[in-house]
Image (cartoon, rainbow, N blue to C red; front, side, top):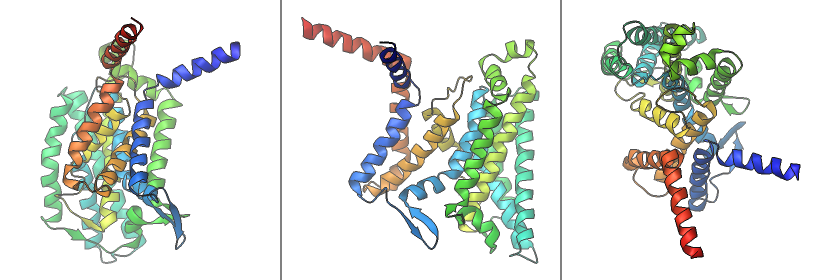
Length: 349
């Protein structure tokens, strides 16, 4: 009897988990793809590397996951960062311009220095965003909108308005290379995810971030350095965006200031929302963000594969987000439960 009660309790916990609906939506998308293409889930080994649609999804979704990880912590503090796409473009521009201008363009050291410079610039941009929000008290949407607007122009200045192409195998491997048959981009994104999870779930950092998001003033009175916490998450978000920018530029071996990271901030916000993190701040879910990022990339793959024009991508993303948010909403669930109850009573009558 006790065992059956325990099993029922576990099933109820799983049923009411905020991850159920995002995971279900992701599985539904995969089913649609399998119906359209029976070999969709097939993974093959070619030239010592893993290939297949699933591999492409996780590799192409790595930049979105990285940006979404930073966005998750920012949103958990009641903030938002609209500048991550511009930061990604600047990061790629800095790296490619340095490589292109180096006398040893193909050298490993050139790529390492270029990527270090790019990430350094990204961190400085995160410091700027954090300063505006945590020190000057500017609303996050306004503070980051400034860099979102000016960042593209800065990236254009760095590249002189041109698409800067480079030839460096080490740099290119960040976007398209493999290590032990696994795409390097996936390894990097997974490493960042694990480090973020350890820092936020195995230390007090995650609790402090949630405390600031729930009530900044109360957390300050309790001795939490809320200003430092907010500053830190914006720096982390910019660093993640900088890494994503390197992946995007490395994937094409070029810096395109106009298009690199374009609208990736929206994909990141969608991934966070789909994953169950509230825009009102407080509790957050890195697992949910992972599922959300995979959902966004799977959706982008599904639309053209079933014959729908790719231009409608964002329309379907909006519909998917509305649907997932509705099923996660307590009000919507309560209304649905009441309707089911009314239908059941009518049927019994």
